[in-house]
Amino acid sequence: MSFSVEQRCKLWLSTAEVTTDQLQPLTCQCESAAGVWEAFAKDKERMFPQAQVVSLERMHNEKEIDDYVNRLEKLKITVLFEESEDYPALLREIDDPPYVLYCVGHLSALQKPLISVIGTRRPSAYGKQMGRQIARGLAEAGVCVVSGLAYGIDACAHEGALEGKGATVAVLGSGVNTPYPQENIPLLRSIIKGGGLAMSEFPLDAKPLPGHFPYRNRVISGLSQALVFVEGKIKSGGMITVASALAQGREVFAVPGQAGTTGAEGPHTILREGARLATSARDILEDLGLLEEPSVISMAAQPGTETEGMETSTSPVQRMILEALKRESMTMDQLIIATGSRAEDLMPELSVMEIMGQVRKDAGNLFSMVF
Image 1 (cartoon, rainbow, N blue to C red):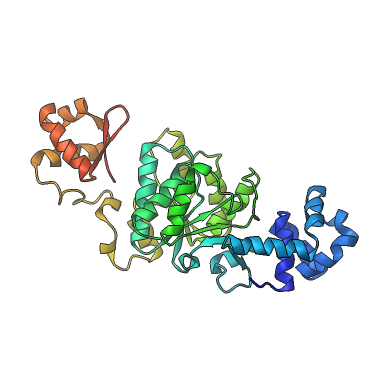
Image 2: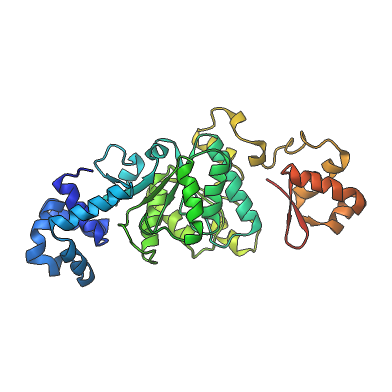
């Protein structure tokens, strides 16, 4: 792995987590990252906070940089700089693009249309279902789904993209060799195995500190031509990502939720402010002009169509169940009233419909239509 002098100096700065907004004025003053390296010994206390000075001093020699580069090689990490051919074009256009990106996996994922799907770490069953199905529909249409590997909607988005046999990019708020949360490491392995990519602007061994995630969020939106907000509170990381997307001139979509629930607060707020409505992958693809062949989107990802689920329903009882669940989720007692059928007639039909992926059973014996 060979780097120019300028690139080696950028790696040096990266190891101390010098941010893009810190570096930009320094490179203006010193003309380049190499100029910052040269000026460091004389003017370090003025140039950087003390915590960064300590780290930069330790790494301010060629041997330490060589050792760091060797670690990158052993871990099979690809480093992209702004001038790199494979650096994401849309990300390069934002006001504060990362000057270094550490990548593990398949850079080819970045050549596809990129759409981010994000939301709360504590989603409802409905939010999980919508996040997964929208991501699956996007992946089936050849879109690469971008998210942050977090619990909740992020994980559902990655999983949905994998189910759709598509690539997905996980943008981390830690080093690529220290992914967070640890419980999602198996998911990250599946992402890379499935042709996707893990990416971070933070150096090797960087911990998932709270201050990292706003920077991570701007990369998620910056990579993508559009962002889909599934669920989240008004004050949440999802809304921070939405703000980044708007500042970057990206299209923003929101999934409507149940009025009065905390997860619907964020999406409903931005819908009132002009975000685009998304109830399926088709909505997003049509609005962005990416739906070349409608047949590639699975029927399961298209709620609200007149024929949804009907082609696979062969019995009158199943059709009555679907008509009832289109209105709202129901318990068994409510289904009995809505369909006029007996429990012993409904149970075998519901079992078949669960297997077919038309209906799901949630906590409290509540049956819901799968969108």
